[in-house]
Amino acid sequence: MNQWQQGFAKRVEALRETALKRFESFADGVLAEVYEAFVEFASRYDFQCSAPQHARGSRFYKFALSEDAYVLIYFRARGLDGIECEHECSVPGRGCGESGRSGIALADADSAWVERCLQVALDDLVSRLSEAGSPSRPAPELVGA
Image (cartoon, rainbow, N blue to C red):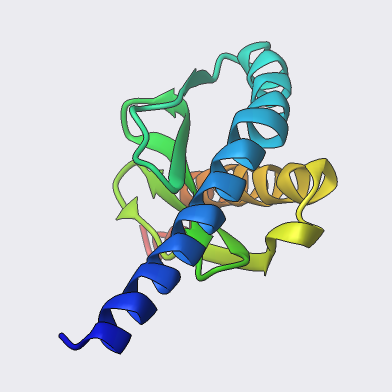
């Protein structure tokens, strides 16, 4: 690399580092606070809640009703000024289903946005579990017995 390229690369890395620090600050403050409130609420309904080891620039949360009935929720830093939330649900007998995704500028992310993300993910899990428990078609009737 020439001198300009080296200088440019350093400036871009500095921007990325600053963006990650902003995400980490948001995650350690707002995100952690909202998650703890949801843990307190969901635990009343027998959810097992966990926050597996996270990587820098991301947070992972799990709300489980059983070993194979759970939702995983991911918050990730995106680009220089964004945050993304994604979730996927696991339903007994069906495995993991498609996920939902939401993104916003980090400057616009607040506790209300995090709450909506968690609500959507938990609602999706309960809806999928309800659908899995209801028969998709009526049982056939015996004719001419």
